Amino acid sequence: MIPNYKKIYTDLLDKKYPEKKQLCESILNKPIIESLDVIRLNELIFNKKSKDLLKKNQSFKAYDKDTVINILKYQKEHGLNNIQLASHFKLSRNTVAKWKKEQIFCEA
Image: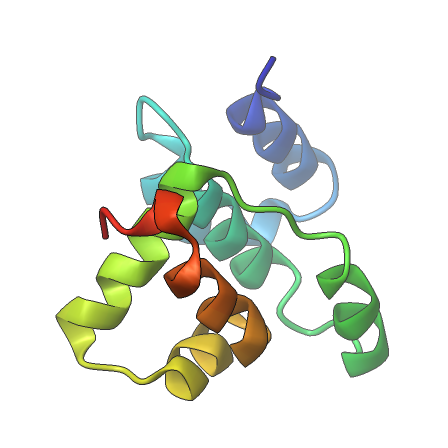
């Protein structure tokens, strides 16, 4: 089961961050909200959180196969090395290297 991200973020914006609702409308109006969209929504809504909290939350991120493939495609399209990609998506460069080594993500 996939969480209903559209409902979760719409409720969050309505109740706690109504001033940021317009920033997030383009993502929330999509028929399907993917993992990269969730990451972008978090950046838009919680952009002023402390670095300690962001670092702590980083350890709880998980990526499905489609998201990993999209991230690796982004790397190719923008000509980024592993360090630049990791910095852009706030990942470990070792995670990026591991994804590239794994056979299941070679489609990217």
